[in-house]
Image (cartoon, rainbow, N blue to C red; front, side):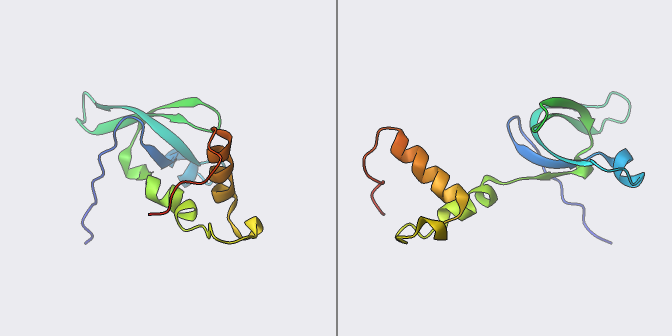
Length: 117
């Protein structure tokens, strides 16, 4: 028997979620990335459910069961930037996210890169 891992989501968290009905019916388009808007307790079952906004379409998803959600940690999203070879003279060796970060930093009025720690 596996111990169930309980994750508490807060407003603004990004999560991968799956439409269980579509998934178990074998229908396409069942997995999405969403932003948590609120949590609430079902009046009859007392189970905590979440309302999300699906990011690619800005469509609301109400009453998402957390058993079909997985947190998307910022650390994972930023890993490629954090490990980018910034001393590499060939920007083609950098991931697109690292290049985008550098461009954004330089556009914001800074003529140089941040100091290395």
